Image (cartoon, rainbow, N blue to C red; front, side, top):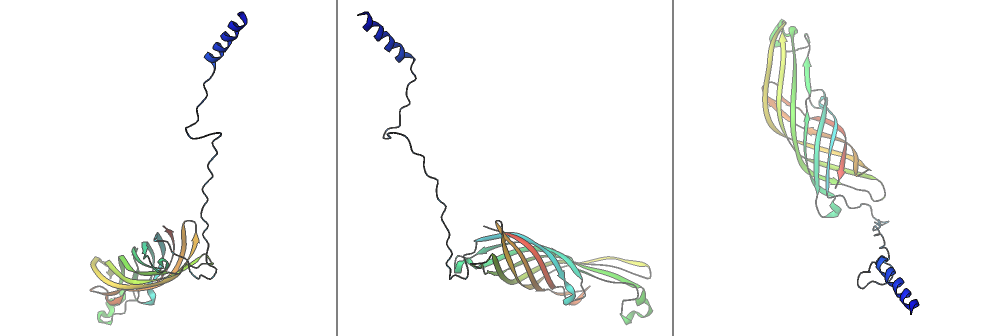
Length: 240
């Protein structure tokens, strides 16, 4: 009798101090197996394909130089442009529409003795001037990418309209007397063509291109001329 009483007391004490087991969720039996990691899909390129689909958007910037000497007396000028494009949902998104905003400020100057206007006689030898075309421009037009399937290269072509918001500034002197500064603001319409290639790098592409733009000018200061020229640039564009 005493043995049964002691056994019952031991069982009661063990039950009181035992850590309750954590119940498994209903419907699960045994150990819970770890879930396998999702497998990333493998993108296979058709061995016979020439091009692959292009990204839907590109956003980036380019810097370079314009050489106005090929079209006018204006000289070389640094250039900069912000650009974005939207690729249309057909033909592997190779065809798109681009929009850009850029700035340049080419100039031309004359030193005393080099001004050749014979109407001024001997006074022409004492005239010097500097004319600067400060140009903020907006570009809009089609852009075609050719993303190669078996190389990290993306050649491209672009062209379209370019709206110029310019201010022509001229400073000069004659016989040691300054003319002061004359400013002539004007808005005009031009065009541009561009071709280049991109190299896939990180989340985008590094680009190099060469282009030409026509920018007719018919101001009181400049007369009839072309403020465009040859443009070369280097840029980087993120592909989204």
